[in-house]
Image (cartoon, rainbow, N blue to C red):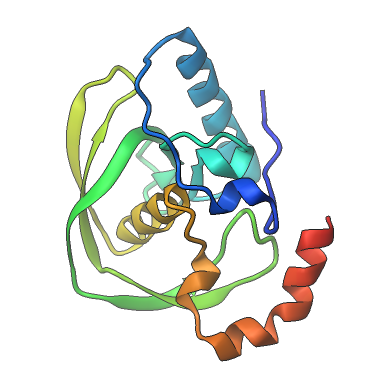
Length: 166
């Protein structure tokens, strides 16, 4: 079942998420719904708070830049290493129609749990590194507009105000 994506202004987007401790049927159902929502929205990534759940879970859709890949979920992910930097245009499903240049690491290494509770370590470069960093920020209540200058944010004020009204 596709879930409702929360827009900028929703308080859940600014909350630090709780780590997942219970790997039960409810978690699996939520994961399935999160992935379905991501795929329906056509995004590269989606974090649990973006659908109203303050849990440390992200869904990643690498098929947008690697057609042979499959969507996957990371639970309690955190960055353990990063290097380089790339400035690129970035958007967010919680900010429809808004795209800004954001500086992110060119490479990140993350540690996470799978949906089965197994620990994994993954490396992301370029776009995948950006997706990991962006979605992990969501788990800490950080939004992509927090990475842009105050001047750019001021120029977006009208659009942001409209999103808050929705």
